[in-house]
Image 1 (cartoon, rainbow, N blue to C red):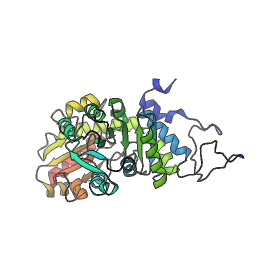
Image 2 (image 1 turned 120 degrees about the vertical axis):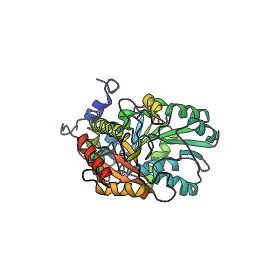
Image 3 (image 1 turned 120 degrees about the horizontal axis):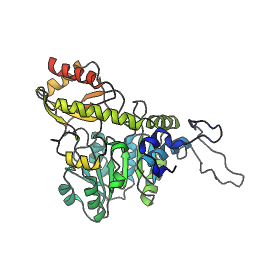
Image 4 (image 1 turned 90 degrees about the vertical axis):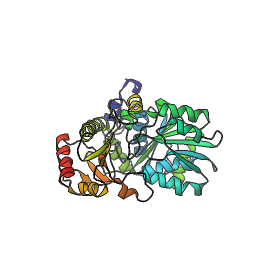
Length: 381
């Protein structure tokens, strides 16, 4: 059967069904060589020259990601940050960028403090409202519109298709951080985006043991070639062992993300009516601001991330996180274990994150155990 006829679940589970040609192994080997042999006439017909840009295990991971996103090509990186920054560094000097006010905090800080040093100007907008994005785009100057949907940590939803039309009309590209939606629930390229970014550390790997990033492109063009060159020249590589673990993690992507999303949906519904919770933030809740857009562009689930705003404020929120027993107090998300974090403490001054907010990454544990642990912690403080 052709890959076009297979579901994303099947493509991921079999890692495209590749069998090692030499050994006939079901699981392909890890290629660790840092250099490669030239042909007698001094050519490199294998396509491999040196380990920094060339690694077969990394290419196998890229092929799986490209298939999951229905992309023409994909590149893996040493982290989600390096993948994102490579994209911005590929823009011409003087380019203008539109980005969300609420997004992954480390990248927002880079865009605000470091991007201008590279000749970029950035405007931050309410990306949940396409009407606010439209006037921020400057035809002829704006080169990239960046979305993150659902956005971390308030889980706002941006209308990818609507913003894609705005960007295209102005001659700009649209890039979407789809880390939390995953290719299981959203395919931004099918909605008109040009590039999809994943912090592959999170759901794509899913086991809290790999730091990685990925970019998937709708087409190969001068821009994607430029991004690849920046990855090579800046050494933003992903090691072969990490690429191997990423492939292994993606084999269970569909099962894991659906289990996480089911737990998140159940917890969000319960916390929405909890006496100690002022607000539950989750795109799957009917009262969520972006619920209708999420229903259109997220298929089969709303992701495994949610946040709760604790009714009695910051101190109560921090004490609640301190009293949990099953949830793990840790940064990151998308693993099989459930994580809890007082996000404002991490983001610091200037963060748009409310100080009473706890960010929850629902894992694959029994939802009743997760509920009892956090319900008890909220009530006992």
